[in-house]
Length: 311
Image 1 (cartoon, helix red, strand yellow):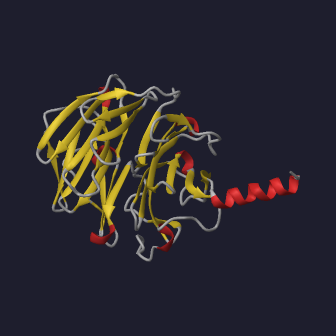
Image 2 (image 1 turned 90 degrees about the vertical axis):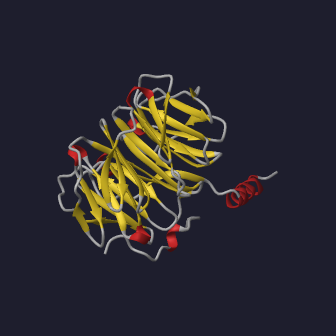
């Protein structure tokens, strides 16, 4: 077989089986990106001194009341015009046709939050949990304490939430009921994600990955020893976890392996996906990675967004 024929076959295979990968894209900030939340119709970003919204294929900065706030988490509902971002020292800002300072009943560091509805949201912080009710934050007392670092909420708006924190502690909230789980580690749980409960994964600041089988959390055998900061499952066979030194872990439905040729060596702090063909990773110094076809046309519904987060 001639080399020309082989080349043509390879080109045809590439066209039929497109290659999705992580690659660097322009970022709206040069400061650390700490959280990204993607929905099917919009995206949100929290960074040191900045917030941004994603629409029409671009991230656009949205001025916040105080650019000294190092925003750690962001979540919201565009259709309710309700977006909230949280920061250390109990600082909290809300977006309602413009950013404004929100009252918060704690001065503890706030690390992450999830808002599923105007009466269905939770914020996690050091030794504190907050519940969102009618646009107001109230302190929760589940009977368990830790420096809580991450929260996952069920997007179908049932009342199920999962929270991870120091000492390998994980809480499940279902309605008004709380259940505590202990991972086999003394490390801090830094990320938690499910596709459809009860099966999910969590990561730690020592690079461990844990699996929940519907009953207990157990350690997953995998080659990573670098601290991990965030984890996301696009579906039952696609997922990513990200961490320091540009580390990206990928999940194929069975195994977690190191993603080859990470496009950065910066610490990566957050990963969020819409589906198994589209997502973003954010990291230190504003590094922003995009998952998809490294081309001008990508397979994603977000490219057709008409609504704008920044007004």
